[in-house]
Amino acid sequence: MRTKKHDRRTNEMTVTLADVAARAQVSPATVSRVLNGNYPVAAATRERVLRAVDELDYVLNGPASSLAAATSDLVGILVDDIADPFFGIMASAVQGEIGGPGGRAGGERLAVVCNTGGSPERELTYLTLLQRQRAAAVVLTGGALEDASHAEAVAAKLRKLTDAGTRVVLCGRPPAPDTRSVALTFDHRGGARELTEHLIGLGHRRLGYIAGPEERTTTRHRLEGHRAALAAAGIEDDPRRTVHGRYERRCGYEATLELLRRDPSLTAVLAANDSVALGVCAALRESGLRIPEDVSVAGFDDLPFSVDAVPSLTTVRLPLAEAGARAGRIAMGREEPPPGDIATVRGELMVRGSTGVPRP
Image 1 (tube, one colour):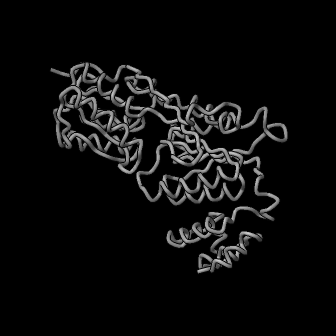
Image 2 (cartoon, helix red, strand yellow):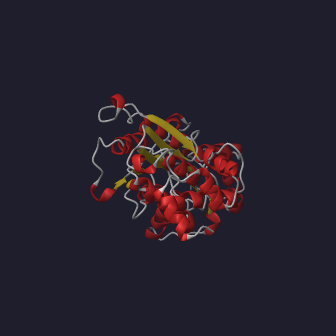
Image 3 (cartoon, one colour):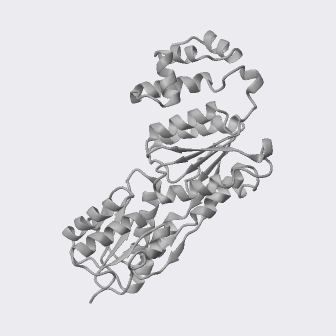
């Protein structure tokens, strides 16, 4: 451990890679690997290095006294999976707004899309790297991890970013209190409730639900909306009718077969998102069931392929491109943040051919 005397010295002088290595009790090469992300490092070691980086404020290359208030032309956009249209649409919209009037050197900025793969460790690493590069802005997209220690670690990173002059915008993500960030949060509960109410209004009482990963806020909020609609209609929330899985087509296929095994009398299946809904449709067809005559299917997000599915998919449209563009403008200082730095972005129910009245 370093003494208080050492801590005072590092606050007055340039913090070096060797200082971080000494604090973390690793080699300078290991610190470099963690910060550059170009070599696998054990999770415990990575955590020690990142903690040392935070404690010593190792952010800048060069004298901190002359660069502390500076920001670069870099904008970081964090996504879980760039191959997922949900994230790709938002990232593209953010990137489309990062140039234009008000920026330095003619307004051009360099957008870097950071693909975390859903890894909490990668998310923290990217935030540290963006802090070190003095990013002009950081936009985090999608749901957050349901883990108190990770949430606090992310909040600490965001505070460091905003304290250094970086604008932070959360797009489709719950607010992060006490971080001076702006949150454009999707109304997942309201959308899921309206979708379930639509099916109940058609006469469905035996509804299966394929939820996303249990550790994600998006999953919990959509499931809460679904359950609220069931409760309001006096329909029992049978745990056999809910299955969790990843936000992908294969999950929808496998989960539907499991739901049918548990309860062959289901007349409707609600999917965590539209990609999952495609897997639901495939499993139902292979099981000899018609859509919607035998089983209705509903998705969420209204991704571009939803209207071209056969039958076209009933879903909740989230304005992903619009929210991403707004996040980009706020991040670049070209649009005022919403009152209280929080805005709720509501979805729109899109009723199409995949839902109908239940079979007798």
